[in-house]
Length: 87
Image (cartoon, rainbow, N blue to C red; front, side):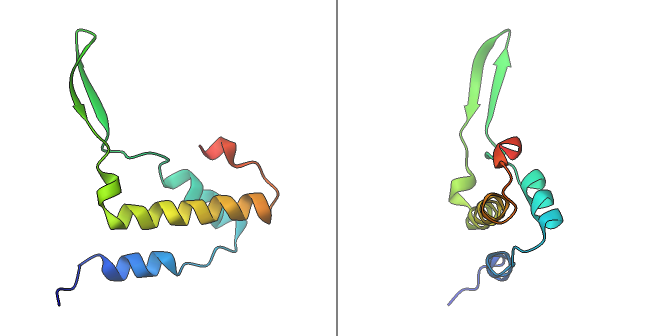
């Protein structure tokens, strides 16, 4: 059975406990809301190449988005803050 190199990192991300408001706000600011690979390349105002979001294929990115979601949920449920400013 082959061991995926990022598997241990993914497991660590899924086990991070969300309990500190300062850390939670940092997580929400650092992890992007959308795929950073997605791009539209324009030439004279015309889209010539469109690179689709590829992050959904990456399990590591899925764990990051899960961590971000848990952080936003913590802000809303425990800290009673509106998470819209992190979107």
